[in-house]
Amino acid sequence: MRRTEFLELFRYYAAAMAKAGVDVRLGKGFTADHARKGGYDAVFLATGAESLVPDIPGMDAPHVVQAWDVLKGTARTGRNVVVVGGGAVGLETGIYLAKKGALTPQQLYFLMLHDAESPETLKELMGRGAKKVTVIEMTPELGRDIGRSTRWTVLKKTKLYGVTLLNNTKLLEVRPDRVVVRDKADEIVEIPADTVVMAVGARPANRLYREIEAMLPGRVRVIGDAESASNAAGAVEAGFRAAMEL
Image (cartoon, rainbow, N blue to C red; front, side):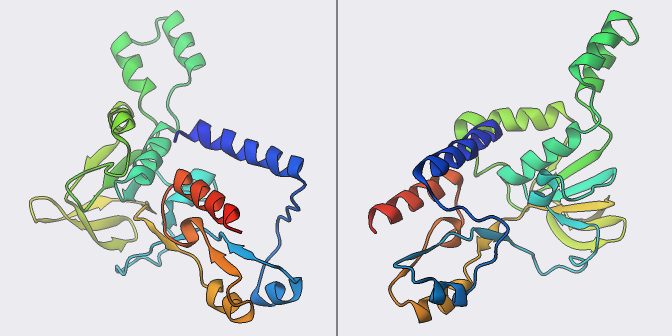
């Protein structure tokens, strides 16, 4: 599912819930005590997933951030960025970062109109931002979780925007200004990095389940990524099925 389709999906559900009279409460916490006092016939735990943090030296450094925070615009990134994880999220994050600072269509038109640069140079500038982005993936295949029909377009974009892709490369250590990796030749090498972006997957965030289940036995259902980290389509289907079985 494309990012634009995600946005439309959010808008649709916001409108659909409002039309159906669903009581949506944002910015509110929910605990087992809330569940006990609420008098609910059923509780659906759709708390999503949380990012995996590998046990690697340097992971607690301030310049190590999560891919979702980068995509949300809540994490700052430097000039030299290493993205750890070459799945869909890692590649999309790499493209997103590499595009920052690239020429806009308006700038490109102005430069072409005034013959400021050669067509070859303008083409290069159009696909190059201000950041040097490297994506490392420990398995042989990049984008393995992307559908066949879209995988090639994502990989094409990484090439267009100058993202360096390194497969069969394992992160060993994070240092203040670089990362240490074992490359496909089984050699230890260092890559400059003032920001390290983690995109190594997620795990279900369902710690509330046992607490609530103890208070409301048989009335709690874990759905979506909170049950098993998947994708948007899987989460929507899980929610639909759970509601139909109520």
